[in-house]
Length: 248
Ligand SMILES: Cc1cc2nc3c(=O)[nH]c(=O)nc-3n(C[C@H](O)[C@H](O)[C@H](O)COP(=O)(O)OP(=O)(O)OC[C@H]3O[C@@H](n4cnc5c(N)ncnc54)[C@H](O)[C@@H]3O)c2cc1C
Image (tube, rainbow, N blue to C red; front, side, top):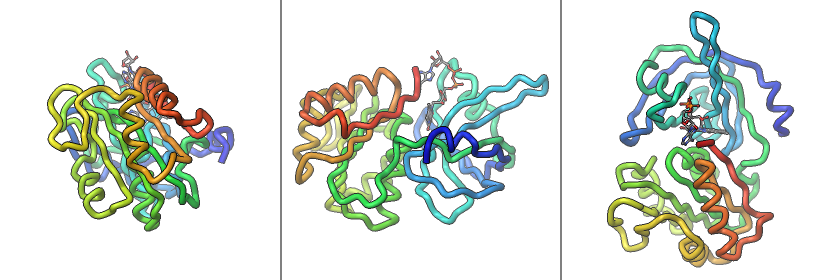
């Protein structure tokens, strides 16, 4: 699907059916689509808010849920203290409210359809959202491609979807999770106590049976620059690295 083609996705109204506080700064919003669509893990939607005076604010949010027959999708939104749309979601939006969105959008940051080669996923903060959709899709399809996920966050409490990821790692020997915790000592020996760098990415690559054929990096602009540089320093080919930048 091309980005241009995806842009023709029509706007639809959906209802917030559930809200879950996932970390101190990130909540999940479960939205019931009025026009269900099939998406590919990694894609996002555009959300449009319209004030009574006609003022419109539009932002993109990755889809956290795996593609399925369900007509409910999950978005996970980080509260930015001076943010416009994220503050609306965190401080005003409630179950039962209706939101306008269009999608699915995005044609480059996509979980490969028939993947067998190793995959490396690197994210920070809400940047784990599309990576989570990929991990969930891999599990839903019972795929066995060796997959390593490197997640950076300030503290253990800030790790989005931590419990689900830790359970998945326990159940699947071909899925490896490593946390890069920057503001407190890590709880597990396989985790790291610093920001992501080339040496850390190289250690993750060494936990895979061979060099990854697909690398997905997602987070703020600053994080993506650092993590993508780290991947290059670890010897990965630029051609296999795909990035999704959230701004900031
Ligand atoms: C393809 C795509 C998918 C995205 N998916 C998600 C998602 O799943 N979850 C999510 O929480 N966000 C996601 N974002 C970011 C989201 O679109 C908004 O940019 C974010 O919610 C901030 O919007 P706001 O209106 O609250 O802040 P704004 O009012 O737009 O900005 C407020 C301030 O925060 C700064 N800022 C904006 N974005 C960031 C950022 N990411 N990190 C740090 N500072 C920032 C701005 O420079 C500004 O100073 C995604 C962005 C893109 C492009």
